[in-house]
Length: 85
Image (cartoon, rainbow, N blue to C red; front, side, top):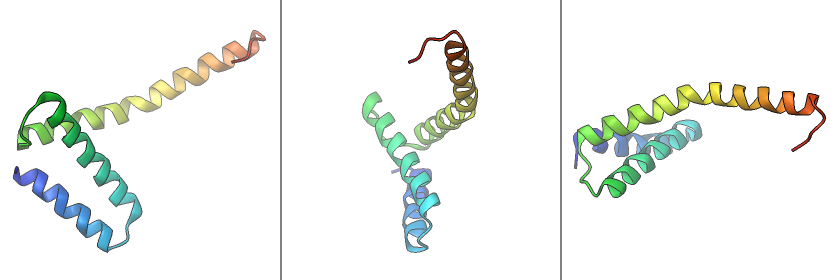
């Protein structure tokens, strides 16, 4: 296993023991993303895979507000025209 992935797993246990639900959820989500990337690419989990996967996840989170804003704009325009979805 990769040292970064081992650290991620250890941090999950620490967050669970501290009963920190938000941190536990975030770390479990990151863990699932890394596992999914390893399975999809049929690769072993190494530091490069962990870093790449987490960078993609951060980018997706950064892009999410723009996407939500665009959908809200489209819904408002649609409602103003009288059509409902």
